[in-house]
Structures are given as C-alpha cells and as structure tokens.
Image (cartoon, rainbow over all chains, first blue to last red; front, side, top):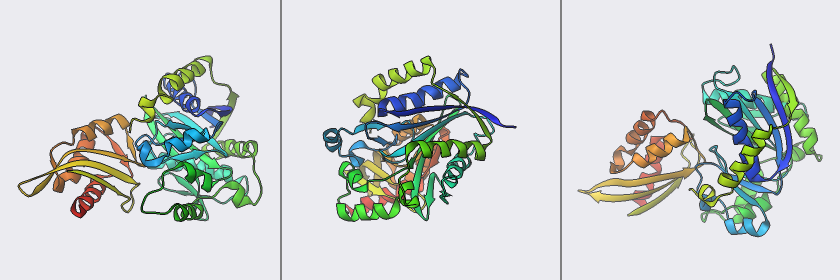
Length: 254
Length: 96
C-alpha cells in the first residue's frame, strides 16, 4: 500500500520565506491540517544557510555577503553552512509514528536519503548514502541533509547540487587562519561535486526535481498528490520570514 | 581565563568550544561553557538548557557531566559527545 503525500513545487524563493515555509508546513502537518508533505524548491537570490548551532561569525563573512547581495539565514536544523545557488532543495515533513519516520534518527536519515539516491539513479548517477547525513558520488559530496523533530513531526531538508562554484562559496565563507584560502578551495573542490560535473553536461532544476520526486515515490512507496501551499501556510511562512528568520536576533543568536 | 577550542574528533562533526576556566587548588574548573558547530541535537532547546547548566564543572569530569546533562533532558546527539568536548577543550587548555 502506497503512502499518500502532498507534493509542493514552490520554485525559487527568498531564503527567509523558504525557511518560513518549511516551518509553516511542519506546523500544519503537526496540526493534521495537511498530509505528510514533500516540497521541492530553489533559492533566489543566492543565500547561505547556517546550521542551528553554528556561530555566524565563525562561518560567514557577513559583510561580503551583504556586498554580494547574498541572503543569510539560520535554519531550525543543525548541521553545517550551505551556500545555496544552483541546486534543488527538498524538505519532507512526516508525523512521528508514521512508517516513514523511524524513531532512530540515523535510520530516518538512511530511509529518507534512499529517495534521493533513487532519484539520482534515474539521472544516471551512482550515488551512495554516507552516514550520518550525506550522499556522495565517487567519494565526493553531492547532497547534504539536516533533520529536526518538533511538534511530533520530523522535518528533513537537504540539497542536491546542480553546479558548484567553490571559488564564489569561499569568497563568502570564513577561511580558518590555519589554512590558506587557496588550499581550502582546492580541498573543497576535491571533496564536493555536482550533478553537472558527474554527468558531464548541464542539468537544470526541472530535470533534477522531476527525478527527485520520482525517486522519493519509488524508494519510499509514496503516491504524491500535487498541490500548492494553503493560504494559512503562506501567511504563516511570511509571518515567520518577517518576525523570525530575517531578524538579527535569530540570525546572530550564536 | 577564556579558552577557545575547535576540533573534529574521529566520528564527530566540527565542534567549537568557548569556556571560562579557573584553576582552583591546581584543578581546572569550567565556570561556563558554550558550543558552536556542525553537530545535531534533538530537541535543540534541551541542548541549550543542558549547555547553560554546565557551570563550575571540573574539566576532568566534563565528559560525564555533559552526557548526564543531555541525558536528563532527553537530548539525542549526533556528531558531538561529552568525550569529544572534553578532548577538544582539554587539549586547548593544556596548550595555553
């Protein structure tokens, strides 16, 4: 028997609204106003999202981001800093106790990431899940993922890189004083990859998001019903964007 | 004395530690401590409560106290542990 999920394809959005909508969907699924939901989206303008526990000044050149017009947002999930540009981002919200939300956090990462692995196989990629929360291809990172559990629900979101501009990324991130920027960039280029690099061709958002939705459906036994966020979710997303995610008290909390 | 530490122990995520340490009767005592990094902790609020409770803790017992504080609040940790934190901070303290 298939699990029935809602599929939202909301396209590119501003960082504060993206995080607001993820949290708004968490709230509406928790209140049983919405079914379990997979959302696929992008970022415009480019943005850096920080993990909940990261120190912003440890990780990001705040002034460089402002000069470059790159938004800075702090996630409600842990993990590392992510530069959001050419990628497909997903978020999945599932009530705890649902068969697709195992109690074990490690197992839930494995299960949900199986959807991404299957999706990437549809594009001709051979990725592998790398515990705790990464998906690699030939030993290089293609996807990072982060999970939280609140209000009796699991929210996991993550990215699949269509392209990666490591030089630009490190013009915005802090370079540890123990390392030179040049060495850091060359190490990062060796550690991180993208779909375009693996496939040797340009791959666009639509092609990747279609494969990703298919991967989740296949690997997790999901039947999707396409929809749009409810008016309540959109209003809550905007409220959270204005009152929380764009506020210095939140962004600079650590 | 203020001690800043950073490390990525085997099996852990990147962890940064800021601590105020006093030496009392030759024993380093962590008067206050805060953590930053790439780790995960659920629930996040429980981690922050546990973090705030870590005051006047002997450095030598930090691992056990950290783990107990987290356990008491039902916090599940990924990429950080008491052993990681004591290892990182201890190394930085002894190098100052």
